[in-house]
Figure 1 (spheres, rainbow, N blue to C red):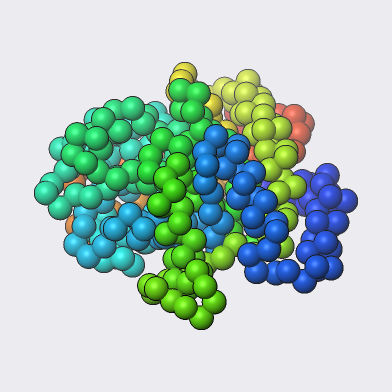
Figure 2: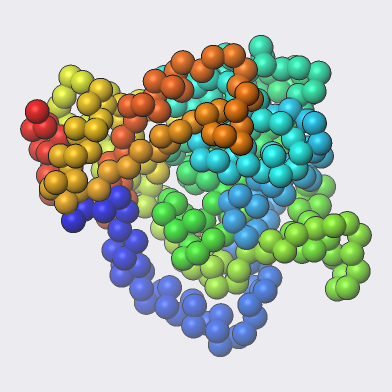
Length: 362
């Protein structure tokens, strides 16, 4: 069986370091906002060449807290993509804000920046670009629109730790960058976890209060906050993996290149990589005219595959009617996307086997 992701292979490579880090936390019994959380925040901030990073309980909470700190709330419209995991828009609904979906670029599957300005209304307060599957959005025109209309930009970087746009790390281009450490992510823990990066000291300070029940001094609460603190054990694990993230991403890019060499079908479109971006291939997602046939052939050979995402957000019951006009590209892409196994440790032999099954499917 070739799985979509094999977490055990990476764990075994790092087992002595990870085991020692976890046992170190257990030995100190400092489980909440301990030294590993503080150290990870400093290390992630340094990786992004920013002064601030705030660890939180999940990637979803990262978005939620960033939006709240930036004042997004009841009735505010936020422009975003319909082709992503529901968390991107879910947090808007939880705050009483309104997601406004615009169509995507047919090559990158990211939000089409050329369609954003037409969706701006007097109620628009922010834009959430999602750096989907590890490829950066085209941020320059998006940021131009944001500046023109005074909009906040919150980057959803859940799938793109280490990706770059014109040499700049994703997460550093807007007001805040939100990352997930979910176990399958490029930089991952062994549970839930997330982090927010920002260059704004005021945003950083407010996030730290908000994640800890609205408190800076124990039993003194200035606002209603959340219990959204990154776990100390998870922070210790991520610190180990952060030292290897560039090698992990290089392994993903190498696997993607191998896929390009072995897959040869006229009815399959391989992932596009923008020339000014450093794609980190959280997923290797192609477009297949005969997707169901390919999935069946792969499954029969013990090879996993997945559809991210079969139902776009504008077609979800909770968000019906939120799109800005028709979304034909999103509809077409959702009907054809197919993701293949992708993780740094996948072998050339496994990739060749996957390519052979795809090529031989009749």
